[in-house]
Image (cartoon, rainbow, N blue to C red; front, side):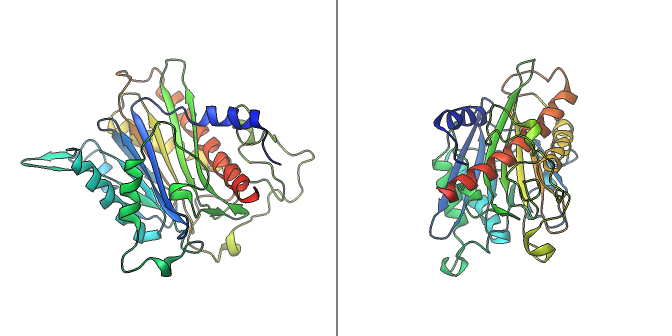
Length: 328
């Protein structure tokens, strides 16, 4: 069912409220059906990460442990291309170096850019890459496209994303807490499982939907008898998947706080996908806090609860918009 113009306005308004001090950029190659997405704080961000999938592909995640030397990051990049896509971080580093940004290792500055990838080779055109994969250049182009009003759907790192029942993509959702803190999630949904309940078009994340942002379909009535049947790509024989999320906030957090926020946000995966965190997924959540509000959250527990909620919404938005794009 296609969304009305009013619906489109409502869910776009809901998903584009990034915390102040963050910008997001996408770049993709339509012919290759793959791309990269970059998240850049205005200055730097404290970051944490938590991996729960069995097949992750990441760069610089060890550095985010609270016991490590470097305390902040300059950007985060998500990319298609499986392990080849980790090269995207080099393109972001090149752009940051041109801006004079990076960790001061005098007399040098070294941009700190964690990265994570999805496996989209099944939908892409790897044989058309040429000698080197395209992700360094795509990520650099994504930096040139940074905006506070990023697109969602089959764009950037979500260009070639799929789920067990159809397209995936990129989704963004946000929420403002009573103390004024904003928490948002950017998700690249490329899950082994399904965002839908049984064979219906209803979303597992329906209880968390805001203002019909993924169609306003609610829960199915009657409840489908096959809702608990496990649906996966190729019945678990397809081992290359992954859903990625970045939780963004303008709160002041320590690295330990950011780690805890990333852990809590994984609950959003379980609210929106079935099954989830499988050996065939590389599910990863990053949490970035830029301190733009100059205050700690009044209720850190509430921040974590809301982080899981916006992640669940962002997953459903990604799938909903991916489906709208392919059915248009």
